Length: 397
Image (cartoon, rainbow, N blue to C red):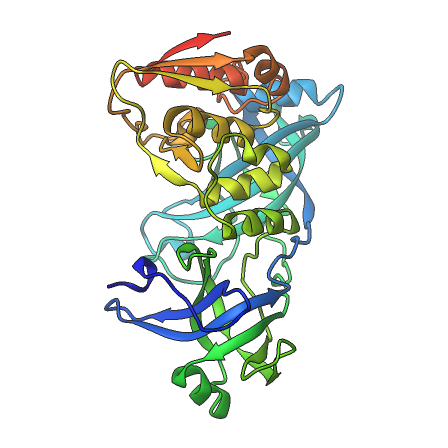
C-alpha cells in the first residue's frame, strides 16, 4: 500500500496533522516523522513588481484594447506568457532553435508612446511580477539577453496578443527570492530522522510535507521542502516529541488566506454546498486545491449552479464544481482554453443541462474581467461559450 492510501494515526491526545515523507525515483517511500503542527507554514509572498517596456510592440486583440484604454486609466491584464525566440545566427543558439520562457504575473498596462525606432509601432509601459526564464533542457547554457530576437506576448498559454523587439528590463539582475524559515512542532521522529539529527547533511534532504485530516486521510501534499535542520529541542507540547527548526520552509508556501481553509479541511471534507463562500478570493483558490476532480454529470441530467456567492473567478469554479458533482469537487476542465490554450479542452462525458441561478450577480461580478484573446468577451461570457462548445446546455436565470 502506498503511504497516501493509508489512514495515519498515533497514540497521543493531540491531533496529528502532518507527515514528513520522502520518495525515491523507484517509488519507494520513507516516513521521517509525524507532526502535530507547524509555524510559518503559511507566508504571504513579497510582491516584487517591476516596470517593463515592450519595445517596438505591435499589440493585437486584448493587448491592443488595453493599450488604447490605458490612455485613460491603467488596465489589469492578469497573467501573460512571453517567449523570446533566438535567431539562428545568435551565438547561444548553436546553429539551432532556442527560446526563453517568461511568466509575467498581475500585468498592469500603464501607458504607451510611439516607438522611436518605428512610428508605426508602440513602446508599451507595463508593471508586472516577473518569473523566469526557463529554457529547453536540450539547450542548456547561460541566460543572456539576445541582441536580436523575436519576442511574442501570449495570452496565458496560447493565443498570441502581440509581438515586440525586446522587453526592456526583462533580463535585469534579480535577487533570489528569500525562503522563510519554518518550524515543525510536536514531531515524532522515525529512525531516518533521528539519524539525520546526529549526522546532518550540508545540503539537506528533499522531503514532502503531507497534511492529513482528523481521520488520518492524506488531503494535501507539498513536495518542495528541504529538510535543512537548523536545530531541534524538546517540544513545547511535551512528552517525547521534538520541535525542529528548518532554515528554509516551502519554496512556494501557501499564503495566510489559506490557513483557515487548511483548518476546515482538516476537520473533514465539506458535507454541504457553499462552505467556500466565507473565504477571500485567495482562500477560495486554496479551497479548489483541496477539491477532487469530477469529469462532469450524467448525460441528460440537469444541474443547478447557485450564483449568490460567485463574486470572483475562484468562486465561479467552486460553485460550478458543486453544481455538477457536489460539495468538495471541481469540474475537470482546461480553463486555459479561455486564454487560447491549444490543448482542445476536455470533453464532458455526457451532454447535460446547467441552470445558472442568480446569473446577473455573476455577470456583474465578473464584468471587468476578461481573458478572451480578442478582448471581446467578459469572463462570464467566455465560460458560457466554453461550456456550450463542450456540449453543455446553459440556462441563465
